[in-house]
Amino acid sequence: MNDDTREPDAASAAPRISIVGTGPAGLYTAQTLLRALPAAELTLWDRRPRPYGLIHEGVAADHPHTKRIARQFDRLWQSPHVRFAGGVTVFDGNAPHAARIIGSDRPSVSLETLRHCFDAVVLATGRIADRALPVPGGGHPTVRGAGTIARRLNGAPDAHRPLSGIGSDVVLVGAGNVALDVLRFLVKTEDDYSDCPVDATALAEYTARPAQRITVLARSGIAAGTGDPQMWRELVALPRGIYRVHEAGRPSTGVESAEPPAFLPGTAPSATAPSTPGPGPAIPDDRTAAARLEAVAALTDPEREAALPPGVPQPQVDLYFGAIPLRIEPVAADAAATEEELADGGTGACTVDFDWRSETRRVCADSIITAIGFDVPDDDPLASAAVAPTGPGGSGRLAPDLYRTGWLKRGPVGAIPENRACAKSVAQELLDALAGGELHVDPSKPGFAGVDAEVRARCVTTAR
Amino acid sequence: MNIHILYGTESGNAELVAEDLADHLRGEGAAVAVTELRACDPSALTPDECYVVVCSTHGDGEVPNSVEPFVERFDAEQPDLTGVRYAVFGLGDRFYEATYSQGSEHLDRRFAAQGAVRLGEYGRHDASSWDLPSDVALEWIVAVQEAFAEAAEPAGAA
Image 1: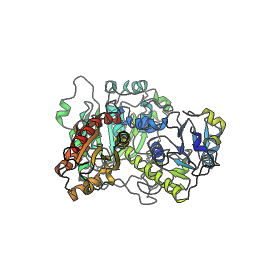
Image 2: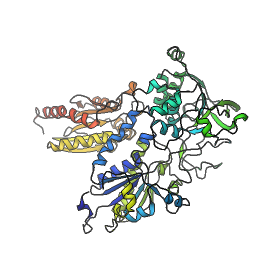
Image 3: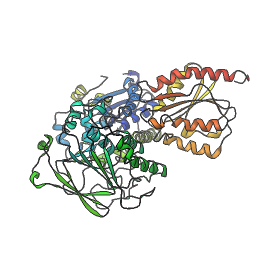
């Protein structure tokens, strides 16, 4: 480290800032702050021993090109002004479950300690817990979240649940980009991953007994969905799967107003009515909606089906648009099936009831995969900072010395470009507070050196 | 030589390329300004500067969201770009075959239609390659610098 920047008598002392979370939001924050404050000292914390968050854990294993945005951050780690401190859990010391975190064996540091040691703290810890399906039976062991699948395929350290037991009848709830990642995974074979870094053991768990029948339940009509047309086209071009489309009952116009899903910012996940009006899903511009309609229509082009490779078993995919899940019920004989039993490939059969065109339909499922958004669980170490997500606008400032950015601030909406814009804007709020005098640089604060010695010794870092 | 780099970025790659090009060009003695397209006034484009346009592709072969305001202003103002010289470096991804690297082309077409002249080869980076965008851009800019220099000489104007 450059000792000159630590001179306590320097007329303009270098700010020392902690950033918690090294996914895109945290890293773009670091990039922006370093450009504006070249002498600043940044400590980047992550609960994982390696950085990059969802870039590696959440981006689909078969989209390696998307992961390459991580390379622009290589320079951060080379800067003498940046320290990575990995394998450390940052927690709210005032939370009811703080004692459990302190008592665990994993290195941890409280937010209060960080605020004591550093001039400012930016929280960029995201929202990575799969949102639960809010229907009776939504907690059945056969239900699994899309995030858990992505992490398992990407070889994430705590992705313990094997991918066996997913097939052969699968219900997929959701039709946004995350759901489309799952659908691709469900229809692909091992050969389709030849150019992709993927956890081969995990993939083999699934391909040993792949899905034969897939039912996708999409709440909105085709045009108003959130899946990128490009993602649908990818499925069209992939010679896997025979598709049938069941359109929503209402006429499908270019601009449909679907009721905003309850989990979007401004609404409470489990409330029956929004607590405050939320921004709702973006009304798609006509061009995107038209492209989406065209792509989905191409899935049922008879020429596509005719061109599928002969002799390869093809899963049947039924896409229901305007479908609302109602309940999940175990088939009586398997009512006591546990997650462990299901992981061994047991049938764990359930029925899934859903509303479609004002009728209740029922389908059998060996597993149910949800791709309906992400959130922060109540027992998350920083749950208090996740309350009341702001949506795309709004401030990330929690206090002059404390900020939140990325999905933690906005809610689980928007991909990498949106997180970049958010990170820059919240970083600017911090810079404004510095410039305006609401945030002071205090050279007497200890910085990283003030953190518990054992944590400093045990954390994964490039600098000492 | 006055060089003005205009960039349009979605995930930061084009911005990084713009900055790396700027560092290199300044190192060679040029006066370099860097502006995000979002903040650029189309009617301020002038023959006194050599423009390097660095732009990514977004969505269906479109310009990045942050560039749309520039495009809208450009279409509204229809500036006369006679005598304006520019080079283009486009970022794209061959994973998206149908629309590969088309983002920057939206700008190139407009500049050309208003009388500006493109110099040098059309630069392109493919995100699905193993090359770093800046590495490709720094190789590409060499010939562009020469083309700018040649274009500046005949009229005797700096």
